[in-house]
Amino acid sequence: MALPDPVRRRLGSFSRTVFSDSNRTGPERRGSGGTLDNEIVSSLPLQMSLYFNLYFFPFWWVSSVVMLQLKYPVLPDYYKFILVTVIVLASLIEAIRLYLGYMGNLQEKVPELAGFWLLSLLLQLPIILFVLFNEGLKIQPLERAVHIIFALFLTFQIIAAFLALKRMVNQLAVRFSLNEFDQLNNHPTSDYLSWEKKRVQAPWRVGQNFEEPSPSNIDWESALRA
Image 1 (tube, rainbow, N blue to C red):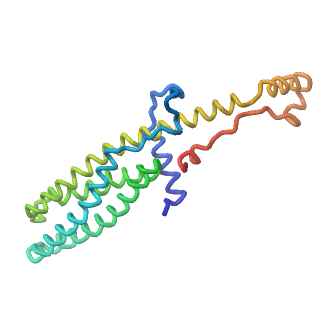
Image 2 (cartoon, rainbow, N blue to C red):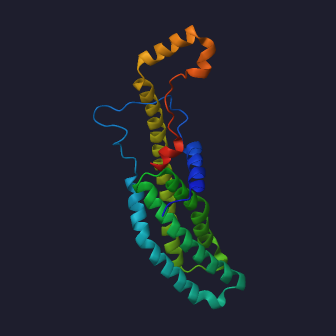
Image 3 (cartoon, rainbow, N blue to C red):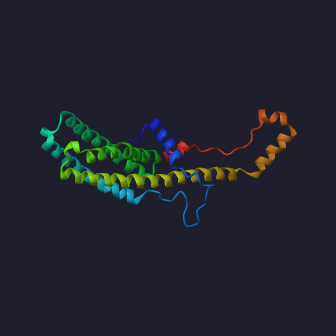
């Protein structure tokens, strides 16, 4: 299961805009001990958090459903609707969020990890904070405890995913630049000299019959799919 191409393109563009390092002046070569191709940029703390989150979420879900059943008769009608909607939405979002987090972090896929980060920051964390601090929901001690733990998981994952995304996007940018330099270096000097000679001898024909050798550009989106 993969993200649709339009979604991947939008998330890739968003990641390139938000997480790229504007202070980077140019590509940096690694030493002989490591190369860009072998460098691992996945976040171990994020992966550990996702692993424990995966086992914690069923406990959160069961606790929320049990507490909802116990206090359902005393809740106003609109709070009944809100709580049921929150549990359903949080369950759906969490399933998608954890999947994107695992895919994005383990396979170093920027669009998936960016989707995980956005879902955590814009949807899941506000939902959990709403049910945690809204006293009209008649929050029970067990609910408060599991909501606090869930909020801590989300806060840590948002920070860890942000740092991991910055590393991944910057690595892609460096790899993109190095590939362009390698393409330039792979063109023999004689090709350029031959083209320059033809351009001087017959400048009116260069645009028609001769084409300047140029390095092939590597599309950023293809790098994101790698």
